[in-house]
Length: 255
Image (cartoon, rainbow, N blue to C red; front, side, top):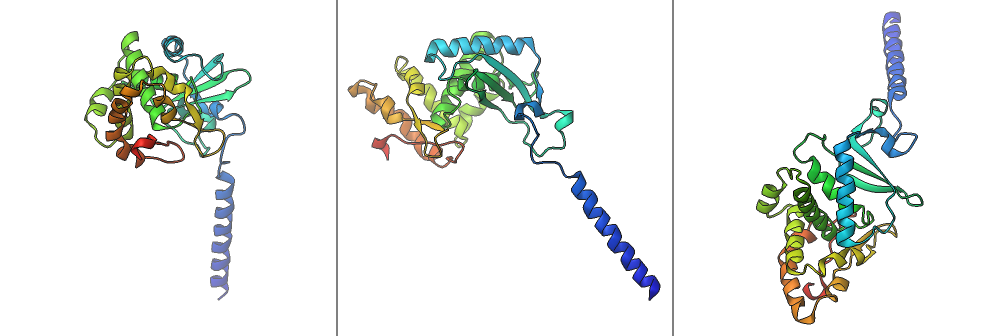
């Protein structure tokens, strides 16, 4: 009996020690400093030059960013060695303004600079510098179209996106790309006005959507039906892909 009690006590002590040891090893949910400091910097002159030229083209096409861009930090969305224990996401692509007063932005890219889709992703994120608060499928499609065209202009590979987006009938990025490319081709003069038609998206004051009805007003009355005909085939597919992150509002005439 004495040995059994000792064994049980020993097991209990071992279990207790294991539990506390596990708690000690558990990381905090996020790093103590700014998020971007937990990710690997991209120190690449070719990338910096691409961003500079891409932003220059975006401004020429769509107008000045809502928040002036003074500094752009590039990050590979992989944790640094110091941050490897933190529970934060990796391999995503995102543009965020981290200091609106001073115009400081961070662009995160989900692949390495030598990946075939690197410049496709980087070009896409450069379009979001115009207004990173717009998070809907109109803006995502616009950014993808911009990415293709700026990569072509600057002689950068667009990876496998063209083949992928032309074939897919369900992927929202493919649907939004084809929809926005068709709108650009049909309405080259009015297309750049889309970015300026941003309104709150209903998920808090920080996030916006493109008011497609406000944009349609810019078109000649006799051509609005043409724009609606371009958008209509994509409404069902994009409406099924809405979330707090990405919204989609069909034109009122198609609801």
